[in-house]
Length: 146
Image (cartoon, rainbow, N blue to C red; front, side, top):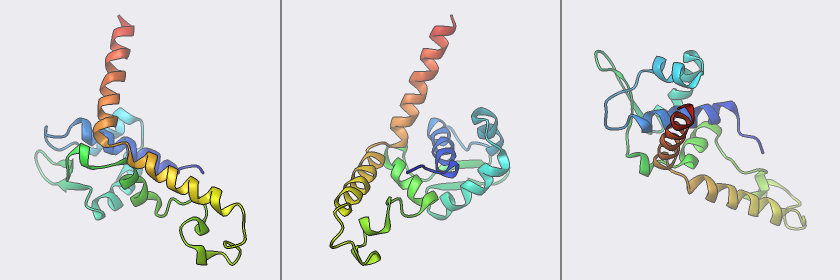
């Protein structure tokens, strides 16, 4: 299964907000510049994230976007589920009634395990983890540039 650019960019956007957590709101144009993603596209991605209560927007001076919870409390699964909807590889992996053959189909066990494992892996990473990794990579890059 491939995740859409919407999810991949959404995770990058949220990681930027996590990097700035506790320092004030982050402007969309700054995220756009730093991540190389169109500001217009980020504007479309932020809407469902706001609707799900993961981010809040502030207007006026000092405006921008902030996380509504600590980075350690938001998982990659939270973000991907908001932006993708159901992330199961096939409908019958979570709903046996979705397929008339699910009771007789040998592959159902594969799809169920894939859904379980994918969900578990996405839930095992928080925005704090990703922000820490981004800081580590930036430090390594700066060290290698010397």
